[in-house]
Length: 289
Image 1: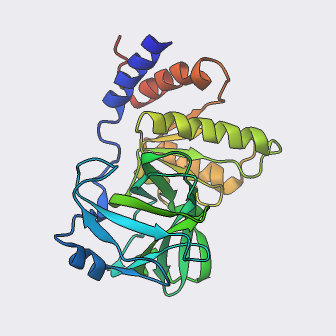
Image 2 (image 1 turned 90 degrees about the vertical axis):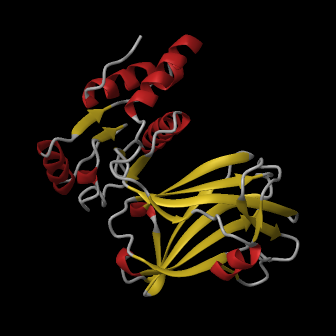
């Protein structure tokens, strides 16, 4: 199995050397010249400590912006705001490179975008220690209040939520918006929601394991135009299609996009071998021995 996984790794490097169709738009690389400059850009809110710049720490020897969290002093979370205008209407996905030393201290991490009289909000669970890339799909953001649109974002908020009454310090190195080459279509109307959830999670884990940037589209967002910017749509476990979804998928295929129906199995790393061979075939990339 290790030889198979090694060959699959080479395939993925070949397939996704450029994980997005266009260069990502970096909202923040967190490479401020000084702590004073970082604190001027990212304002601490509530009882949250101020951010700081550091050249080394438990994350390694790279320069990062740290997010100190005294969860003994705050009721539920720490959060910091950057006040700058952004037009993010053309980006279906966001990624944040985050270092977490103690996942037991942080329940989840929420990325917020303020627009108009409301916010777009999306939380991701923190499952392990170390560097990790949190992925946020635009179509899955919850609307709080009355946001005016992704083209009128004026505040970005980073917010880790307290899981334990401890003092901890996270680090960030890049926040970016991008258009992935691959989308997963999640079936929220299936009569088998448990199977859908598992198939989608297994597929997402496998793609993430090989550093493949991807987005997840809910059934109400498949026709929002983002799909047409990608190369491949994967249907991991889909039973129900609305006429609008069918029309959007047909338009995508007619425009040169590839559609792949794939039901995950429990054999051989969730069927990753056959799955990635199919990706290679659909995208016209040869599978090297």
